[in-house]
Image 1 (tube, rainbow, N blue to C red):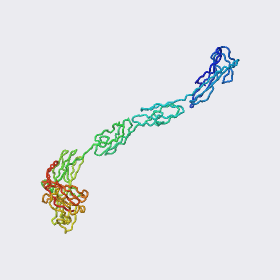
Image 2: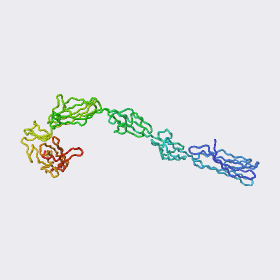
Image 3: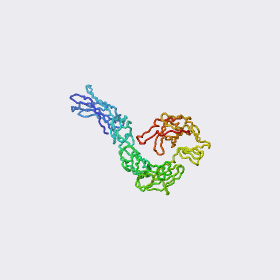
Length: 552
């Protein structure tokens, strides 16, 4: 057994100064430690520090640790005991031991030496160290005492692009052993390593009008991500790349490029139109006479339009049909040269020449412009000849805004709306029925701000509304306008504008009226003349007059 001496205490030396002197010695030691403390031992002996080299002390020396009597002579150690076990003493415990030795002389004098030894077993300490493990700002080390618990530091390290999860006991740990601010109980020094969770970012793809977008990807902080090489598809478009907003026309990333941003992102496909259909602008159609001159009552038609295309081999074709019918009649195709141009005043033709159109019918006119890859088409309505008021020779059909039809009898027609009337009803004036309708007012009024008409019946009580008829001066080139009852109810005392012109376009004007449920009021602009500063049109409001007001 190897005992390590922890402390040695010597008692007071006693004996004649000219003869042998001695003292008692006490030693404390241990042979090792365990989880609870030290295995403690004590040893005693007597030390002769001075001797007369004679047997000054016969075998009459007594000690406290044994009953044996000892004799002293030369300098040295006597009555040496073995190491005596004191058992295991806990950390922090103060261990004590005492011993005596004495000698009684023949004259009765007692020479005595005493010694007291003590030793406090130190409490072990342990160091808790912190390693940021790739981060920074790790907490300072802490000291833990044996048998006590320690609260770990609540300071958290930092690391760009990572979230701190807790502490592990190895630099490669992925599972947290100790939380920040947790309790450490082990009686051992330790180094705790930060456990990090790297930031993860989602990269998603939006086909942006196409289909077959690539599947999303996951990007790690600080790690370059190659984008998907798969590309979406879209009919008639070329894929250019990816951008970070849906309206971009220039790509930010190509397919397969590296994405380095530490952020989630949605990438939108950027498309380039692979083929653009022919463009048609300013498509107009008008009635004309047989010489191609514009005429309101013309039986033929001429067409004008602008066109543009990106391809070659361009041609156009016109189709027509009465509006009431379903099947179009096809005309011959005509070749166009170049990739853009204008067609001005071309006639609606078939193999026999200009196509004759009924003045009493409206026609749907369709234009197709085609290139070698596709076509585009537009439609427009060519209206029937505008006749303000017309009647059949027998008086059995009257029409406002279009020709009266001989095949209809006992009918009052407003545009495409007809009202049946009894055969006995005929046209009368000033409050009398007009083919089942009522003439509320007639005259020749310029309708300036001083003019007004009080209606004998509120518009809200009428079946449909009122019909206003204007003309230039007192002639019979009449211009009727229908004002619905519902419109007046929605916008009471609202200003209504009625654009007016003569058949030869030599006079242009406008009448402005305030219409309420029971009153029509004029406006100061109704007798004005001048030139519009924007359009350059010269207007003659003073040339036009209100002639009739009908209940319809």
